[in-house]
Length: 476
Image: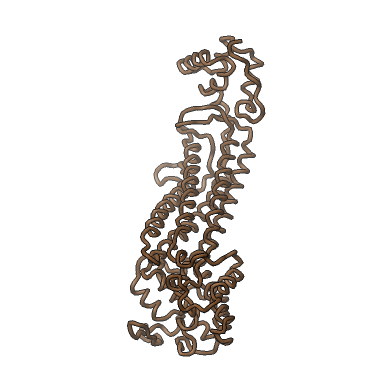
């Protein structure tokens, strides 16, 4: 290890040696030493790495267009950025996702990797910064304070698009089950007590619609991230950015990413305002909360199998106990619940980080970036697992559900418009006391003729699957 070839680099603090074969440099080295926080490098956020390279390529293109960067250096920087956007050198993005400095370490890591790869493409040695410099050329006309927020927004947009695709998979999975269970009659419940009949198909269609609704809300929230502050430089006054740079850089970035990115109307406001991140985080929390509720329902509906509701069967994906033979647990909904809990916590983090920004810059965007990126990635994976390893394989215990409806006191609610509230109450009381069925007691008391009772208690009528028969006036 001691014989590893090294190269010497210099920064504000002084001289340091870095391994000769790495593409990062002295700034990244100091960040590695200063921020051993999570052990998670930004390399594990591939959308962020891709976004950083896109921003640097757009900036280089604008600088070349405006005559600030010569042809040779521009082509080398552009080619290096294109390689990184294609997945190369991701492992060279080594700084921790949580860092002080408002993202400066991340920006410098990108500058150094791009500069050293560009030097290689030019046939020069890594670290030959006299010819092509991380700050002078790769970071030309930029500041961390416009590069980093812009890259975060692009990364989060890409991650959100991926999550939206996963949500569509789950939505369709629930929808297929809704069709499969369309006419499976069961008891609906309120406050965990028997309420009125419905179908299992209606229950699963609700889950599908809840996912669809959240997809729409998330699509709306992510649109706010398309307004960027690239070209704002340090605080939004565009100091050190030439005239025409903002429009040029943003236009090129939109073309590179194929996203409808636009410059913020006021760059000073955009440089300090994290409101779009807060909005997206809140919407992501909404998705997590509702998804967790659905998983609670799946666990409850499948509880038992002998001493619980046992209305549905979740696919058995692994043995459930090291001591209880035959036990199978709802492990897929459980893991989704836990991901949801994390996202709810991340939302608190994002809120606190956004609130803690001071004056012209928010120094806490690294933890915002990490919280959103981690939440989006984990929720995507959890949703796909839920769809493929749980919902797709759910089956219904049809006979048990039918028997529960026939035996439920809640059935009397459906008869209330036909026999009157007082008579319905008496039937319910006797059914509870005797254990006999509601329909049996209604017939015994002569409250309805058999054919009328059969018509009213048809699944299509009970669950409103078709127009119900018109109830008569009770006083007739």
